[in-house]
Image (cartoon, rainbow, N blue to C red; front, side, top):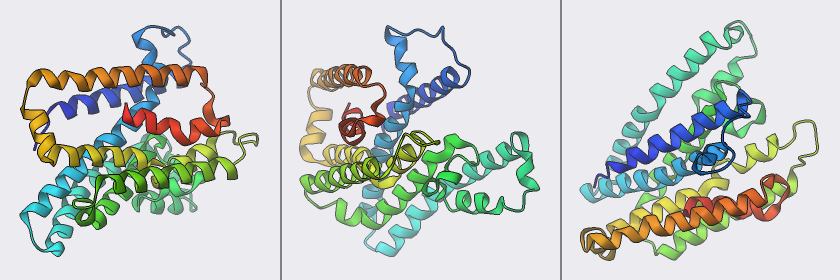
Length: 277
């Protein structure tokens, strides 16, 4: 299955993140604070959209590959090669360009090898000192790569297990992880909310959003899902309508709790609502 409009969603998510960083980094105070454009003031949520899309696209690809092969070894090899070719070269290239043009001192720092190693292995999001060490916006690629490995190992089971089990594992692990990070981190120290953000956005803390994408892939592959997509075309309008309502509710909740790092309920549950939207 191929869904070309997924690329439109990816483009919207990328644009949201870019504009958000421009607003924040350049202190663009004149940017609209109301109306539809206010979305870009919270454009960091585009990353959450990326994670849901990845859960959908990557699991759908894994399921399709499993359908075509009966040997797990072939599936592992095919999946690993395609995912690696998709993400590794561009990640290495952007890191190199960033070092050369933004942080050339790293070429002469004998301690920089630690940064290079963690970024090369896609584990830089595990360490607060490394998470933004080279091209900070690439922190999400580490979570993506770790999710690829998780899907590769678990796809044969996820393809067949009951839907509620996926939801229980995905939501339960994410909520527990984020509750633990909220309890164990202090935002009143010199680093502010940074450590809480780093630990919350590691793979276990984002599993609910990936799980939502996986559940969507399972739905699309089901008999009911196929009938829903290929049946009465007017019925499809229910999905953007429900999404718009959920997004409206989500934004209302967010603006009433905009500094949500000091709220356990927001830290634990808000990303699930955004992912669902």
